[in-house]
Length: 163
Image (cartoon, rainbow, N blue to C red; front, side, top):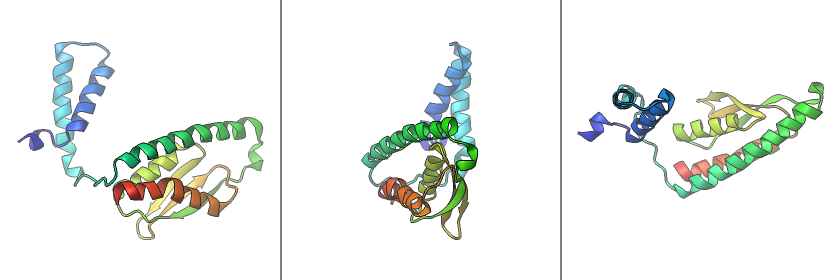
């Protein structure tokens, strides 16, 4: 019975908390409306959630998160240096193709999001048939090195998490 009312309890909890925080005041009406929305949104979107991804090694998620956070900080500094101290014509801005070993759509989505969150790179396209990501790099020095870094730092860990 609970699964039909709350198909995704964590999403319901998140919606409830976010609604209360966005309301910026506490009252019975805010709590009631937050509860209604927290039940309605996951119920209405449940058909778009075919199943939950299987996470094989949840502790690797912490390692992955630490690496991503580190890369975001380092990339922010590098992009700031590029923007502040280099001329725009000296950048080697280009697209690269990253072949994927990942099978899970959730894992591919996490990888694409990670690449996009890291300053200086952006996931531009996913080729389902060729099983590749097209990534834009702000200042590419070596394409093979960039592909290897994405595969070693991110994809290898996502393979351990999801497959």
